[in-house]
Amino acid sequence: MASESETETEPFWNIETRLSSVLLVLAGFVGAAAYTHSAGYFVTFMTGNTERAVIGHFLGDHALAFGALALIVCFVAGVIVASICRRRWWRNHPHGATVLATIALAGASVTERIISTTDHDLGLPPILFVAFAMGALNTSFTKNGEVSIPITYVTGTLVKLSQGIERHMAGGTAREWLGYAVQYASFALGGVIGGLIGLVVNGRDMLYTAVVASALVAAYTWFADPRWVNKDRADAGNR
Figure 1 (cartoon, rainbow, N blue to C red):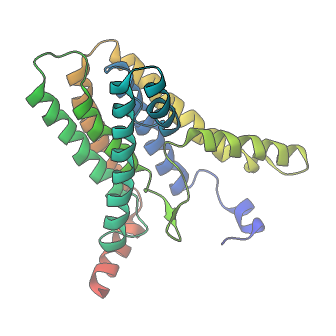
Figure 2 (figure 1 turned 180 degrees about the vertical axis):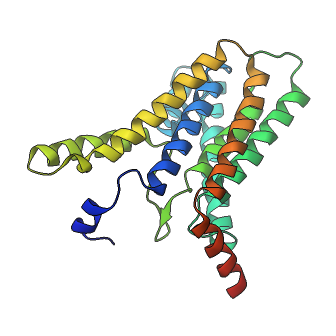
């Protein structure tokens, strides 16, 4: 782990900050697309889905409750599958999770094309693929087997942001909270972009747009830092 002095001297806008910002914008965009062009399904907000899965039964809306539970299961499956792939095929590199997310979003588009006869609201089956994609995306930054930068866990980001502000007030520096502020702003920006695009395209086209956006981000995460490309090749040669 880097010392406090090393953290202070390291450039703030480094490769990890840039990559995480791009991935957070993508997550915000996909989350907004799924929410605005479906029956209000959450693909990034598992806290809300957990409450829906429980409260839905008390309200008599069992379809809502089981749908929310299915979203949670698919999100968890995305994390597990991406973690397995990361352990076996890609290490210390966020590109693999983004590629897996792109494949899942493409699966959502194909599923929507097959089962839907309209171009408007998305049904639950394609949204399950989107939830899987968001789960996978959360494994992009991992240290010691655990997530170091959560992509869709905005509540946790706000908590860390608030704690960083308190440390700054107690004598620290803006670096205590600035990174978390950038993460939150990036996710919010993605939501704004998704909302604006959603005003002019329908649900099916939003999925196509999400696939293209995710593919572009996957390419960016692969080529953004050549050191990771070389390291992955070296790891492959050593196995």
